[in-house]
Image (tube, rainbow, N blue to C red; front, side, top):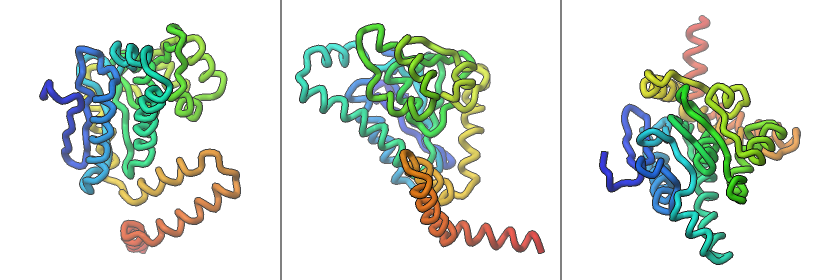
Length: 256
């Protein structure tokens, strides 16, 4: 693994793996890492062989949030500079949502502040048993503003309020109970378990998964009627895909 690349990209058997590669900085976010991660996601999205993306971190931690240089930049920057800087993270979160395939955050160690936001912005989150999650921004007078829209869509209001205003960390078990993450795997078998989990998406209908992801996020903020109408459109599109036609044919043949 090259030490010169802040994000390492590999693709194997339909699984794209994007590894945050700043272990000496606990994979802290900076301009270069956000740009490289965005590029890696676009590359994976453009590769038709890719059926699922895993985002993980090199070393002991997933991502510790903004690094010291990024915080120093914030302290010195003008309003317009801060807007431009924050926009890059906004675009990254939106990119994850728009990707045609599922994006899985595989969290080992700590996912804090923007790092917790990055994990939660992914479609799915799996974690090692020793992983920890939290939004400690309030402790330095900052607000987890960019990640709050993501957190609010994942947790009940009072749990979200508690995490962002108390600056607490929760372990993987509590994070699962809260609904913040999907699965917890043993530390010893974490890498194998993550790959097995991701590989299930390579065996399912790519078009159905893409349409399901699109519809689920499209429904955010819609009324019941709007949601049903959006569902109708996707229903019709799904019926016309080759994978659906072939799947129905196999099912009917089996029933006979």
